[in-house]
Image (cartoon, rainbow, N blue to C red; front, top):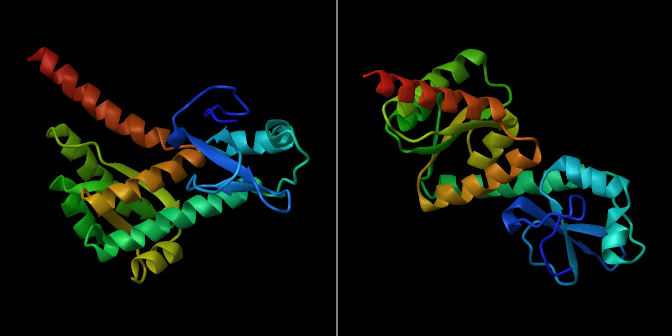
Length: 216
């Protein structure tokens, strides 16, 4: 299967919207997150729902035209791989100076338009998140970039990746290293279902600004 067509939806898509799978020497289906493993591959839309559907409906065997073994928790396996990829790149970005930590520094990076994205630990308090969200809305209102925020990792994982303790809020800066993090964070977020509320919030701010301009 040379074309990038999802075996579940039968629709073609860009590589970043799909996850590639190959068959290992033991006939087990193996996720190829980096898309560099040898052998014939098949593609599935890059979210957990479609991957679990492919496993449940035996679509991997049909795609590879062979008897294959699908790991019991393939969806969880892919989630873990995407998560480790994002956290690993986050650590590299921190070493490159492309990450700031702490609510005050994150808010400052957002208001200055330096932040590419914001990460909140899953344990982050509503109050801490709200203050940074207000800064994000203010940045959009003033014509700055729409800076999305994600709650994907617990505090322990963020702290380990970033070499800190009690990391609750972090901002990834708009640098080359930051863009590499963004790509992986977006992939993990999409896999887990996305952040529609966050997108809607920023879109609402933009709509309000457009309406205000129309009334002037």
